Image (cartoon, rainbow, N blue to C red; front, side, top):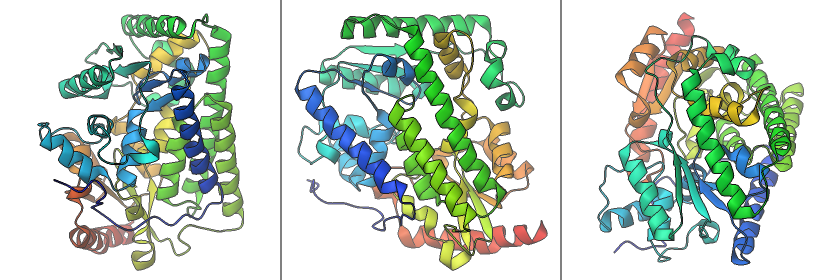
Amino acid sequence: MTDPKATRGAQSRARNDLDCTPLIRGAQKEWFANLREEVAAGHPYIYTDAYSPHEILEAFDLPHVINEWWSGIVAARRQSAYYFDELERQGYHSGLERYTALGLATLIDEGKAEPPWGGLPKPAFICCSAMSGRAEATARWEVMAKAWDVPLLMTEIPMTGRPMPARWWENVRHGWEHLYPTYQLDRMTDAYWALIRQCEQLTGTRFDIDKLRAVMDRANLQQTYFEDIRDTIIAGKSPVSMSEQLGNVMTIQWRRGSQWATDAAELFRDEIAERAARQDYSCPNEAYRLTWFGAGLWQNTAFYRAFEESHSTIFARSMYMSIAIDGYPRYGGDPVRALASRYCGIGLGNLEWEIHDTKRHRADGVVTVANNVSGRTRAAIAQAGLPLLILDVDLVDGRTWDEARIMDQMHRFIEDQVIPGHARH
């Protein structure tokens, strides 16, 4: 049997440059510890996914833990190899989509390993979206609800068969009512009112739509701080490494709409601005830039800094900050319907946007893993004239990490494709 205390995968840790990083991460760890105490005292919380309207939960003062964030925490703790071994030992197939499966793994492990931060407490209910995966994801949510013996509230986004409108990111903040079919907005709005009714029953309080507006105002303000950071990264050398960008953005984003998240985003923005003003860059010799396509490499965020000294190469862009800026803000109208519009078409995976954002970050190449790309993605990147490297590694499963092989692939990619391509520009 696998040793629950054993860790496998990459062993290096990302270096942090920002003073705000330990403050933000420490605050999140303290928040989770307080959450566990509150749940033990009888207070409810919600387990949810990335595609659910967290602002509604925030408007009810219902703390919530996001499944994708939890997977990232488990992977960063180098525990994913053990948990995936355990899933397979219990009969779950090895092809299970792994990025979102670690929550299930820590739940059914039944305490044989010591989970991060004391583990997940039992939620009042699970709130998730059918957008978050295929049929196996639906089954995974059902298994978790059964294991916890809690209700499962799943929303399904009606598909239209239409592509995202061209250059949607230029109009979606204020023009969202006109970007999506009315029946789709109606269906999602009704689903979110069902969530509101469930929150009312759980908390014994009536829904306050003005409180939701205030939550969304804070969330919108938070994204403007992120936009300031992105503008700074685009304008010159980057004052922030990708590893710190990922960790700070996701910690803040999963608590968006709270006053803490807005204040943390402002703190993050201000330090980036100060570093840029004094030309304090994460890689002072930065010469080449890469984009990471798709979800992040949470099992080894140190990877994003591994080529600064050897090749003067940084990862400047990931989708996390950019989708927060371009896909999340909504202004005006009924706030419940505005939230519904976000998840009718948030823009993740939209190739027009991905290529546009890669180019505005002045990237010289694209790196990702096989799970993040399709044939259409390869074709779009090739048409944009960007070299592409696809690593044979999983985002969270430490069993797939081969340091020598991956470093060799990256060195050859930078030297044979990125640097010559930059010279041709």
